[in-house]
Length: 386
Image 1: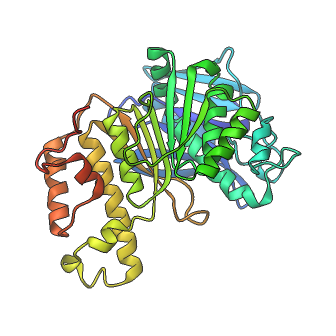
Image 2: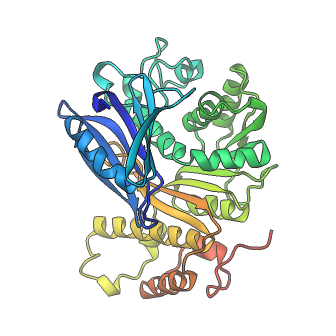
């Protein structure tokens, strides 16, 4: 097979249960084309850039570790099967191939593409009237697309939810101007091809004026299953419990309230990009590491990382398989971490997680909002009765 036109590759499932899926997409680095592969191990993302000319050899090595691989070329889509070390290639039927990009952004195979016929994106300022990315919105565009990529990684789970109940319910907390809320609607309606009557997406924000403007846009463009509400995350009660909870850049403990709500509602998927984690920074007792944390910026970043690690551990105690992923490159935004969690029946060693979590908080003589919300009795973290 000629791998020269490869746009994307997905190796999955692994033969070794301790391994994970391997996903790659075309990028351009210093005017040279690579396939950038990402592997998640122990909740940490590892990347490897493979030059296109070396891709055939790399593929030959990796496919031996997986049952199959999907190869998306320019204009074609193939599936490779590994049966006892014998590799066979089959052209996929009725599957869309990834088109080649052109111009100075040809290395980026965005799910939401420049020039897509979505008039509301122009009204939101993401695209110009000609369908090009607005210069002032390029970083925002990249950030949104990176989120949609990470969201789309859960496509199988989304399909499972949809098949189970014939509908998908999503809440976007702190939606603001709702760039992401509109794009999620576009994703489900035009990419996933879910019938509009089977989609229910609600954007929630404190600002009544912004919510009113977003509601007017949804009405203008006929998005009948997209709604907006002016409300506080804390204490918010939806008409229908959401399958998916999204919270991007919830400031400080707003993220904790969003996560708490998701756990309380038994949401299947959670996507949260935290922001401004001030809580532990103001409360943490640094005596265990006085000299290390005496520098303000070190204490600030340490507190933020500790906060998000605590949040992830708490979600694992609630039977969520949880990852902490780099959302976008820090050069584009310092708010670059994403908590991604999927409800699972496979519980980790809760006693070990709980004991280490309690020991860590005790060491720094502090607590944490999500921990407090879910744990009136800190010896037994569990969601409150519904």
